[in-house]
Picture 1 (cartoon, rainbow, N blue to C red):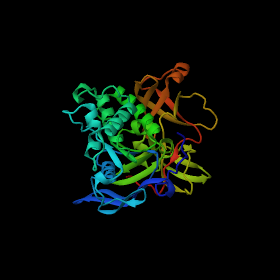
Picture 2 (picture 1 turned 120 degrees about the vertical axis):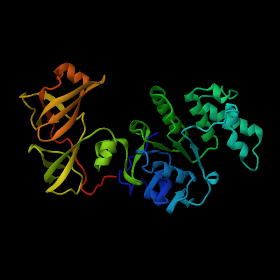
Picture 3 (picture 1 turned 180 degrees about the vertical axis):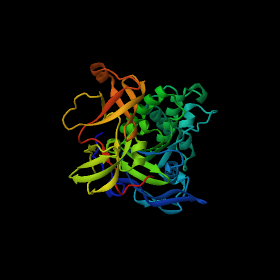
Picture 4 (picture 1 turned 45 degrees about the horizontal axis):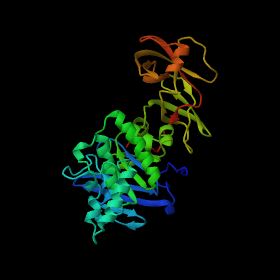
Length: 386
């Protein structure tokens, strides 16, 4: 399902006509704790959106306000342009898959899936319930498992039962609260693909809460990074990885080296900056940035490379003298930890193929860290650490 690119600006993310849900300056306070602080976010109809952040950042509070399990202290929550802030959960066109699945062990798979349908008033005919249950089970590829008991199902199968129970009511929004936290790494990866395929086939909006950056990057159309109850940045996975606005986002999405520098010049989307050791580099800058000013530069470990001390440099490449302190082989790449003279610790990830061609480097060896022109990013001056 092809979707239009979306803006990374949290205030102008989605055109109003495309919006299925919206937080409007939404806050939630528990006593002295401000769990959600003036959230403003539009969620697009049919998109896969993830709330990503560490424990206590406000992502689950946001999900629970959307579900109707919590009411905002201030602001509003809209679904289909209607304020549902005071509408109870059971009257909202949403359904939720919980981290622990919350399945009934004394019921069969089919009975679990049809539970919500049986609670509706006026009562739905039994034949219609059975047909809807079978359709939901077929959607998650469990059509032959209806008579089984929950305790007879594996962890991955139980998750699919929970998904079938959530989609059988045909909600407009499906909410997922860390649904893969209890699965092992291999099964988690398989379920990510299944969830994404399910979302694409159903065409409904999925909203996921997770602390796992790889999970969010793998499945999301957009990611909302949360920190201390606030939205730090919203964007596509590639936007957030390539163009983090703050140190917090750069550190949380992937790994990043953060270097202090003096930004001395800005020309278009490129700047000239002097690192603490006096070496000049030419990173990217955000539109509207100005110089001179103190700055922080984020550069990903895989953008840098290594060369022997004294080796000739490609044109336009800066070289940072450094000493290797650790070398870790990780299969597809080798992770080097180094101390750069006048700067401090840095990480460089060297692809395995490059090491095969150029050779590796030993711990304690003096090398050059190569910084190609136009790489790195000067973090936005107005961005704050969430």
